[in-house]
Amino acid sequence: MLEKSNANYNQSPSAVDCEEVEVACRYLKLLYDSAQSILATEDPTSNIFFHEAWTIQREISSGTDLQDPISSRIAKDMHERFDKYWNDCNVMLAIAIVMDPRFKMKIVEFSYSKIYGLKGVKYVKVVDDAVHELYEEYVRQPLPLTPAHVEQGANGALPTDVTKILTNPPSTGDVLSDFDIHLSEVALTQIPKSELDRYLEEALLPRIPEFGILKWWKLNAVKYPTLSRMARDVLAIPVSTIGCGSIFSSARTEARMLDDYRSSLRPETLEALFCAKDWLQNSPPAPKSPSSTLAKK
Image (cartoon, rainbow, N blue to C red; front, side, top):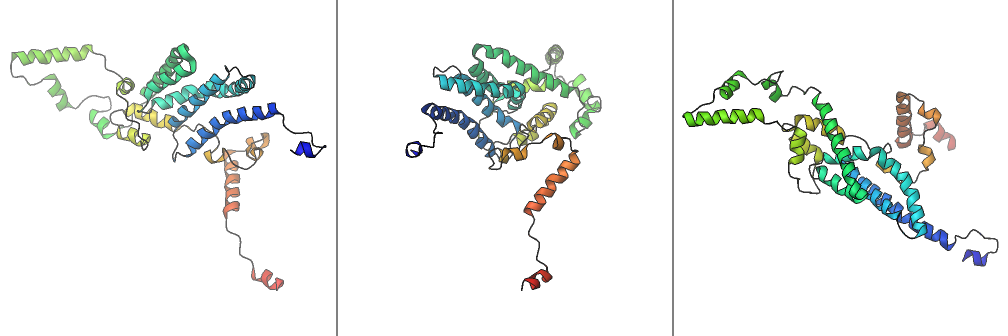
């Protein structure tokens, strides 16, 4: 309307421009909804990010195959950018969701089949190998001496009285004696399963909104002493270097970017600058001195 009423105005967006904006907004809404979902979580742990990331990856990937040239072009441009992020961190995000007893490897298998189709099996194996490799690193670390471990001794040996019970089981007859020997032979031939394998084989927990994943691992630390330490570290990984509240801040983005000078500051200096800025912005105004008040009068 402005173009029709003002001959000097020649910057009116064309119909193609409007369509491009509409398509771009459709994909940007995926990012916005994901951010809002994360913001709604009071204490976000790293397991919540996988759901958002793989959903965005699937939607943008499917958009690249659309027949509409505008939608396809914008989706390809966004996919090229997001795919770099996805390739860098999808394995770590997948490990984090595996540590969620409501999903484990099942959600990885499902999501990768939706993203990659038949090739998803290959990527699922990458995640499975990465989980086991990370777990083995924690196995090689010594466990802290909790009361349960102190009772077993530093080298993992059982107390003497318990050893006597196991080596000399009570028997009520020859038949039961043979049965005890059979149990001992079976125990020696069976390969014990790791904490990780036992955890993955157990049934999934119900998906309830108020589920506290950190509390669950704390309660199951005795059952999974090594795996619980691994889960605690993985779930504490910060996925974003920017606070969730700053994602859609009205402040200019340039103000939060670190140039070469600021990025070379020592951490202590940077912390002091941020604290000083926060104190100055939120400190109450200084009271006026009596002399300045009298001067105005």
